[in-house]
Image (cartoon, rainbow, N blue to C red; front, side):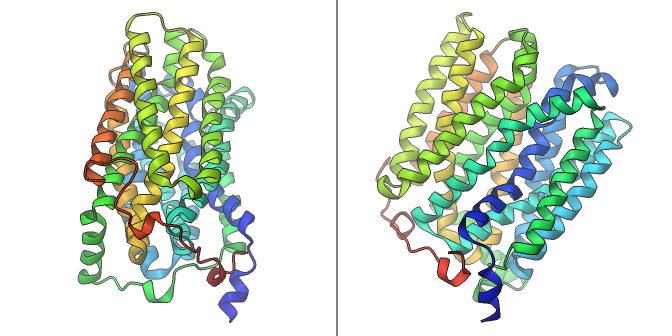
Length: 421
């Protein structure tokens, strides 16, 4: 009864916003940095401008590796202490990044920064504790929609900070934001891990959970599908400053255009939250993936022919990111749905594969930057084709219909038990 009273403190809307805020600590640590890349490269004497992308890569490597640890710990000790502890470490790492005296030191602390930020993967476990099937896809879409306000605003925030203070203050702002979110979680977030799902850290339990995550067809292949799609987005994030500067010679427009492209992701996430329970995760995500392939294919042709303009780039990238949003929200829900009993380890393994894999794919594409938009467009197309292959493997060659598993049927959200009304 006392647990019910504690959980009842937080309502549905507040839960969505808090979950999005926790996830946003990851995004602000990436996107607020983008306008500062040239300044950091100059201040820390980075000879090769392409190497400044490692600021993102180091963070994403830590983010991927950390997810293995935090999710496992949350299955043993509960969601709340892991989220709070991880956010506390995030604050410390952000401040140490701001104090870095060399590029290599910055990269080292960025890895730790990402390692700490990985704790918010537990947010996905919290959502899976409370919801399943299409209801979970709707909640993830709503969370994703709120979460996307950060990439919309973060580059402009970074640019504003650069106008008022040295680049190091961007990291300080990241730490202050995470401290606020941490305090909010301490005071308002209930424990959502069901007692019967609390695991001991024995070899048999861990091995059984790993087998469930890695040998379930939907869990494995939709995770791989997310990974390569995420790689296309990471390539865009890493190359966007150089693209606006060196390709279009309009670096000052980057924050506004970045925000415009991110807005389409938010609109798509909201649309998904409205229609997913009616049309199903597979029909929406598979259609979006096919449209993604058409858009990136056309974008590659336009860029290769040398007729790319700023407005075409923004148009194609906005459409690409909208399709990414419609796909990834549902891919994540379908990957998580079969692993309810090990949601922490499930989110950890899936997050590790998708984040680290996406970071590596994005870094490989980023290294190909040659002063044109061709590597980004062609890389996104390649990511889409690889994702389609993984989706076909997940669905045994059949798009749209799936296997009629319980995970794709309407499910009653476990709201009452968590007190989220």
